[in-house]
Length: 78
Image 1 (cartoon, rainbow, N blue to C red):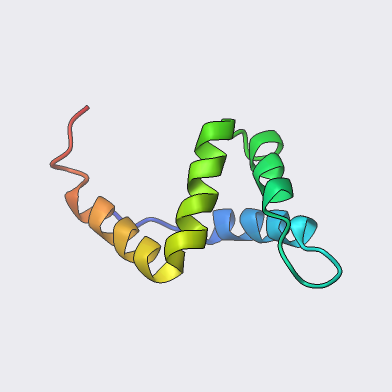
Image 2 (image 1 turned 120 degrees about the vertical axis):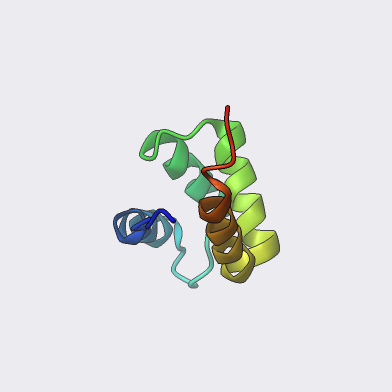
């Protein structure tokens, strides 16, 4: 099974979240989407989808999705 190191991207995204966090410690989700598009080179649709998944499901589901994607990656042909 492939080992995926996500530490570098976690650091990058933590910086985006810090820039998108208001003084009242709430995330400005629109600003985060803009940062993902400009700095992270996401499309608007991709950034909006990613943020919606994060807001709706959180890290528990996403870490399981990543593990399943890695486990099945050699079966998927595109």
